[in-house]
Picture (cartoon, rainbow, N blue to C red):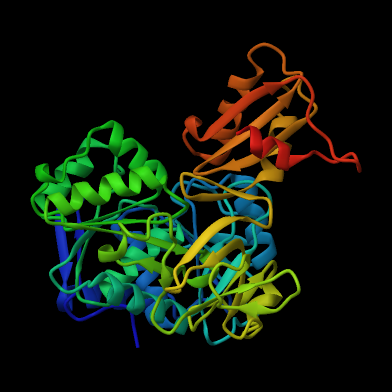
Length: 467
């Protein structure tokens, strides 16, 4: 069992070359062989949208090595903390950076190797680890088994109808679970992945779409907001026939607009729902049901089951009953890890994931999300801790002692109590620089006095109502 179909192809736009068939298999095998002599432990990869990163990932998966995919722009302090907590056997993709204590520069360019030959042996089923959040705080790692990654890739390919004729670009970061799932679901079906690093809103990306006959695009809500402003027209890209959207809820009017646009051009659109903890996809709205299920997150993927946990703790699939969304399926994570010793642990969830999302099912089993239990928001599809954002603002020396952050679709709204002149703009810039996200993802507003609950805590519900 593996992710790489014999007919899969990788197009390296920057290197102007294509790898496929035996040539691609050989390149992956070379990276797999290079990991054999490493000491026990996970392999960290600072994962860019480039060919070496993809080959490293596939090589580790093929070699049976547990691999953690990390944002290449991760703050040095956060990377150092992760290395200290998990003691990886190697850190790859660290070109030009001096090794941390306990590591030395490897013979392969841009690699650190651990000096200590002893370490925890990860669980044999552990394949991929992904951080739970962005650059703030000390992220936990989601432990995904080989079976979870493989099964989810196959399930996504099935519901989207991916075959060997499909061509998908790297429109999303590969260390992001949605972007990784696009890669996986195409490679398992012998399709083509075009590796292009400039991003969906850049001219070189669209040049590649045309040159290589891209057939599908994946985007988060922010991308669709921008595409609308740019007056996206699929007629300009004759090969393009599929759009997929995940990473947060897209406004219903935009879903309808893009669905109509694609249908008018003979194409289709899929809305999808998932979490990193589910490798990552749990539900999809089929293209043919999108118009009459507007606002829905979809029905469960093959072999998956959605239910709702009521306030009394009982689960139900009865329509119209609200509660916490629970997902069951073979793609559910093994659990979290916060330190090296936990990499050896087995499956702790038994295929059951309490998502933390609030919602209900309709009569056809389609899920509608209504809210979130915990204080986690999304900025352009990237999960962030709202409490961490407040901490960043307070530490930014802006003359602000009290801040409150709330999720607002694909953005975050931060209220600053008694903010000095210019503090709101400065706070947005500080957050953008810290998380390496565009400043427009942070809507910072002044407020004379934050609303409080009887216990003295911030009344976030009142703030949400204002938004």
